[in-house]
Length: 378
Image (spheres, rainbow, N blue to C red):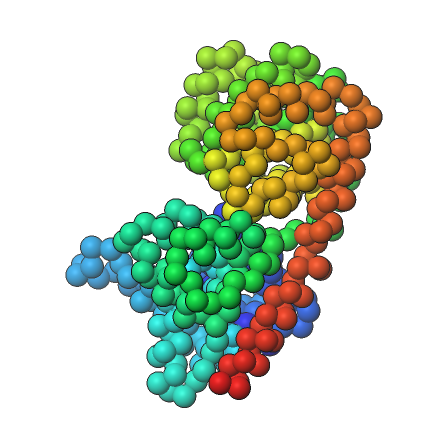
């Protein structure tokens, strides 16, 4: 198949998943065309089966905000015709599904028919999409898609609850390339982060308020009172200043390492003993899955799609949002016994096998094939 993929080209979960999906599909013999405003961050290698087409938005003084959706629609029309793309897979309802539908209608005027598969990732539904200004456009975009997927059952349920959806929504979870998480690092590399007796606690996010990273700091503060420990914070975002202030106030700045946007996440996770994810809401919890794939147990909130990833009492523990005391208790329970910690690490890795890309990507292929078959009949 010739597949066009539209996504955000950033470090965010949707962009990472879309890029990894395209790369794996290309290995399975499909021709992939990424269509977005920048080359996706995980798209390191272009090949005969992988292509990138940049969407440029001309600057016109007439517009207060430049019309990206219009530029994207026009680019999709051109690329579908030029490369004979058979199906479009767009990640995020708006603006991508909205722009793809406009492209589809323009192409139909020229006798070209291309179906749209839309994947919902979370923010487009729970934050942006539920806003009254955007709700009609999101509803329209989902209902006009030829197939719709959501990355968790929780997100599917939220979508049905918030919108008047007539389309069937297939749950296809996020995935991970487990081959990339076979940790083969040396102890001397670990010593750069912590001493041998210190436990390494890790958190990865965009440090937005919804991630409740101050709860991470509080849980870690409680842990380090009971045992030697270091906290690895990976990511950048608007809460960083508040987080640093809280660390200073608690007197733990010397035990917290701020990595910012790091390209060595696999290495850091490879040495980690525990992962903290205290979010207010998560549509899936890809960071938790990456930790589990590295054999790191997870202490998390029980919100959104996280319980579908982190198995309570197996790969880690779930607590109510904001329940720092319960998270601390569960963290200390895992960390205080080496045999127990080893068991949780092994279980975390085993649970992650359910989300191996080799098991998930064929589900997308089946949806493409079914969608193409249905559209040919109609």
